[in-house]
Length: 234
Image (cartoon, rainbow, N blue to C red; front, side, top):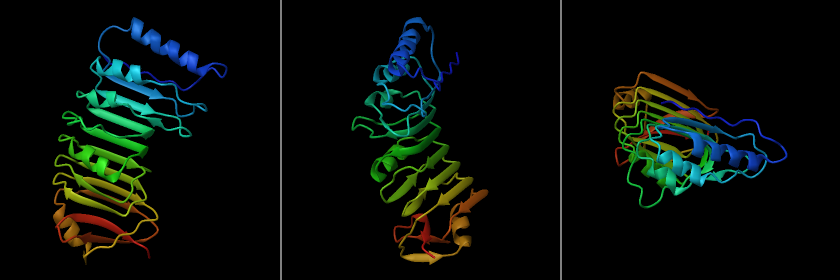
């Protein structure tokens, strides 16, 4: 069964009450699994109602494709219950704080991950990516990343990045076929520099590459033999 659910319009007098009523109806009347769910409340102008119980309900109903878009003015703190959705195959998160708990082992079925305006540390992001062994598509847009990220995703085929970052290290992406990098205010200090030919050689599966920025682009490799893409201020 495929179930899609979107909330875009709210009663200005009592949005939280209306939200609660909708959730209660879903919990009370729905029968069967919910394989896909979209919650879009990005235009909500007040504090986001707590949806912890709702996320837990989804984890118990075979959710495989989950999209959560929260209000941009008040990012939501994702609860630990999300990391018990081990059957997830597609996950999209917008405008939230993400902190995987220490007990989280992996999303061993996840093939698509999109993070847009998500606050997460570089270390936790690297760990999250590495704990998705089947990940094929990765999208990072305007995500608050502190410094560099190292991508270890042996099954990754598509990577889209938009935002500001010091460097991106493509450590283990042998299947990467499509990459899009839209960067701003970025810089990188590296040990050695070389041309695009060496980069394409290191990413032998790469078929499509799109790069957009206001700065000169160079390709770099570190002493640890990680292949990276860096941007130097022109």
